[in-house]
Length: 287
Image (cartoon, rainbow, N blue to C red; front, side, top):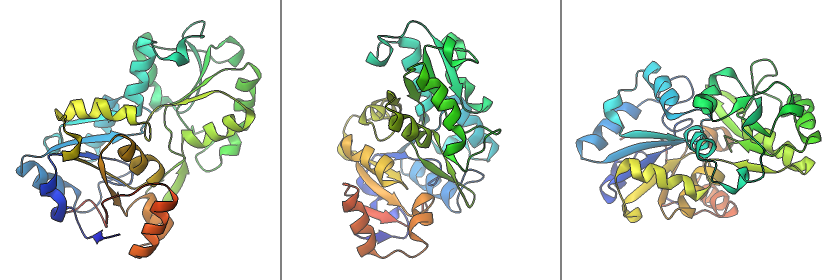
């Protein structure tokens, strides 16, 4: 597998760029070095740029986070988040997941900052799983922490006792924030699945989430769109399932797993074990 230093060598092959956020554009606290400059170069060349993230909050909330990091809105054309897609699903209620639900009452596991996914009445949050129609999982909260999924087992057991189906709004199992590897909603979903619970995971690698982001780009020819992500089983697998080329960013979780100088042979071996075939790896989202 070829390892590129930046995206310049492949930029002219594509009209659209679908970029993961955590682990590619930023580290959860600030943009990686070279990212604003790389985005500026893409826009200078007339490329369309959109962010596709498994963040369990609506797109407007993700944009507010990027604003706080100082990332200029002129550098990208739109944001699609798993939280946004989950909000649409709850608003429309036309997905089979909702067919057997009695109502909109949700027992929520997650932090208050994720509650944009329930706004406008798409879900009514209740404190007791006995009163709920489904389990809304947006990930770890400040009280139980982000290091050990086992801390959520009692709440998950209570939800499973009432056979609540889980809506998991972030399929990621882990994320890097600064130098820390933290659990995400997907890690809680794994526990619930082990119980025998029903889980709908909204976000990458489901190829269905790429339709909305391609609408943001205004592009229909998927051969001219590339996705860049740091995680093979979500970012790269999702892009491949959606018919897009993919670049494997060696930042974020990839850097945590493989260090600063992985060999091309090792990366190829890992990619094949995950069932993905990116066009190349890239050391970072830089020009």
